[in-house]
Length: 101
Image 1 (cartoon, rainbow, N blue to C red):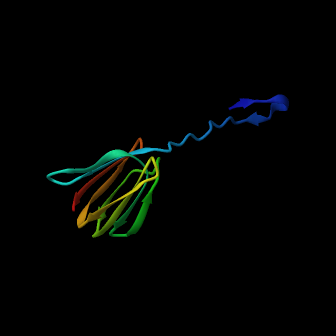
Image 2 (cartoon, rainbow, N blue to C red):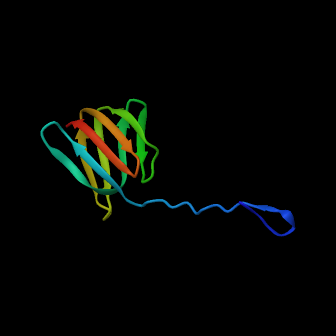
Image 3 (cartoon, rainbow, N blue to C red):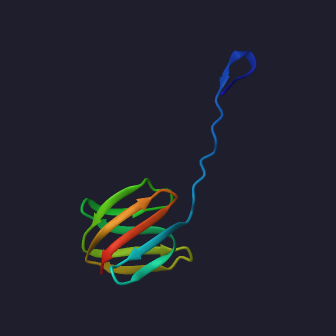
């Protein structure tokens, strides 16, 4: 913030920079089901369906039975059937899913 001509206060705002890619890891107790970059994830939680895009706010949620949809950065959609699990969205566009598949 600085004073401009005529004593008018001027506030400079930095441009919002968003990421277009996020890192997604889907793990079971025995295996890694997915561990790559993606552009979008759609999951079913106890409070409804959630769509996760890069720079999503951090949350933790319980997953319910359904299809986990992961959109890879090349546009391919990968689906994983989930029986239950926990979804954690971490800062810096990192998603960790611990699942029973």
